[in-house]
Image (cartoon, rainbow, N blue to C red; front, side, top):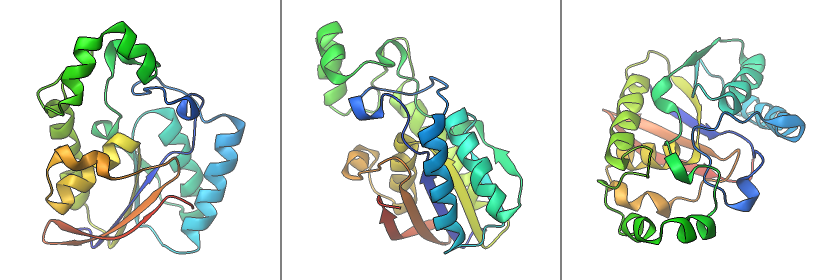
Length: 199
């Protein structure tokens, strides 16, 4: 069982600074993102030694994980359940755009019901369940120190699961691009040691 779990979000990608809902769009890091990923890798290498590295299948995470792995040498293992939520018809739109597109659905979403399904996309409770399953895979992995490279929504959901707090509280965690979260794991439960948005 993992004794220490580090979770990091990929660096910024085009659209993040415009508040766009970016889920399953497979956007590359780009030159600036690669530079930030290398800075993240150096920062992590100065503090940790990972036995295993895991990643979402989307290339913005996969490439980040590959760059980090150059510092540690373990291969990157893909966990499909670590992918971001499917926003469906809301993908690549910002809040103002989706409010004009479908105000009734936006109102339902803001009620924070886990039964809400993004139009043409994923139901929130299904997303929460698969992230929970991904987290359990990590916890059953041998190694004292593990790294998972994933997405903001996934990280917030993982924190709720590991800290045993309601999933509805997930937006209480601010997870910026390249943020790093460190948890100690005790009998399947997490103790939050650090949430660093400035690495």
